[in-house]
Image 1 (tube, rainbow, N blue to C red):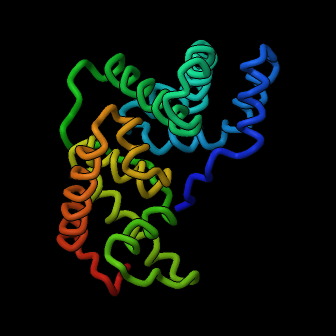
Image 2: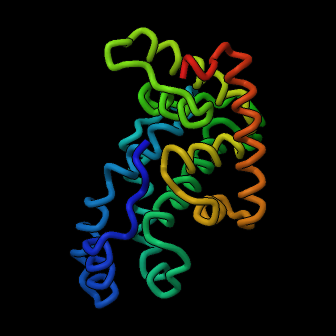
Length: 211
């Protein structure tokens, strides 16, 4: 999984231009981070939502929200921009689920669209195993399927903690900022979710030799 890079000089420069009143820099900043935003949203779209909304439309809504709140963000700078990007996208997805699926959020069973290579990478890191060779395509696909099935059995917040840590590359403090938790609470949830997923993977027949 690709770690999130520290705030780049290009992002810092664009934020500074926006702060000085250069509105064209807003579009440049959003274009720079659009791929990351699209990936974040695509992975988290519920199966029920994928047939109703397109990821690109959700990305566009999130970008509109980012634009509206940009001045407030720059005035407060409560977190790095890439973390705020994740937080805004996450909150938009929560509203989207409530709008289309009802007010109740399911405790478990949310399937992710985590790519095969990222699923295998997740199993490898959690079980401290060795990844299958590049020629083992069927092994990759089966292992990825089992990882996604195990993830779907987690509480949605625990699932999100793991995705933010392993897929988006955030640390516990940044995870806490995205989810609105205390850093200590995010750290504890991460530890519990890690143990739970490791156990579920083993129950799904994924061992260290598989990973």
